[in-house]
Length: 437
Image (cartoon, rainbow, N blue to C red; front, side, top):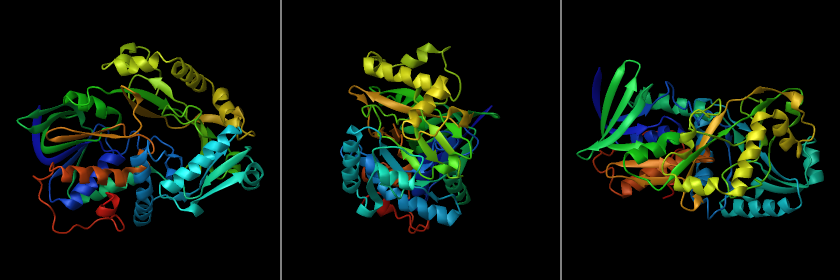
């Protein structure tokens, strides 16, 4: 049995992006908002299935990753303010980006320049030689390292659930456990059909925001949008590092990616907000955005769902296939994963890796020219679809969602909503600043 409800705005996706978008809309407009998610709690998928590092934008190309760099810079103090207000984990750890080979030192110097160009202060970064690195992190062996001193480890899932609870107390509806089965426009009105344990439901809205993460591109396709883009899904797998060795490393240790043309990070050593240490990830290709276990070989057609052409070009690329094969080796063998991290943490041993951490899936969007470097905002008549919102997306979510809302306001998409005369929100969260005005 089904029923229906009407809202001013329906947001699909209760991850960090959907919830921060709902936050800005709720303080700017006096309107009826619903956040819809298949999970029973907010932030259950990619938002909680990551390392939890708030990244500073030193490693982001200011031309190719301009929006991610800008939003990462703006969001850092906003997350700090929320952590203080909500008593949420905030663990300053810093990140060493290490050069194992001589040629990587050039990359670190480029990163330092990018950091300054992206708005970081000079005193937030420091380039060290290998001896200086060992004096600070004795378990790390490298030729040089660039320290990003203000990187922080947090729990994005906890941040998102806290924000969602605030919104619910202010009247926003959170419809958890509602799996979206179809999206269409009927007479210019978005209509979202969902299924729940108690039956089917139809939601109608003046405006729809699709912030469904790994599922966002499929929803955009169902609305006849973004047809030239496809998604490839890569599962990132981590191992927990056992004590007493784990605590001998006190900072995040990354290495510049060996294949920067692809949206993968090489395995790194990371300090979580709870104090645990992990190594990973690899990038195992899987058939869907929620394949957290297994390999999905029973659904080979899912790898080549339409549109096929963007994927076919990649899957015929010898370098890409070689990379994918290497990532599978790191999945099947913890010794292989450990070996990649031992290049710069030589004391690490496979016997210290006895439990898997939580896996996450990155849905990387592919277009005619290959992997798309930035998030995309695709507009319909009464909808907006955010696709390819990947790392460091969680870091920049408060500012990115403000920019999305600001763009929709400027385009007249929210004119049917009634502005609030005044809005009370999180102390330190200023919409005009976050939106880059």
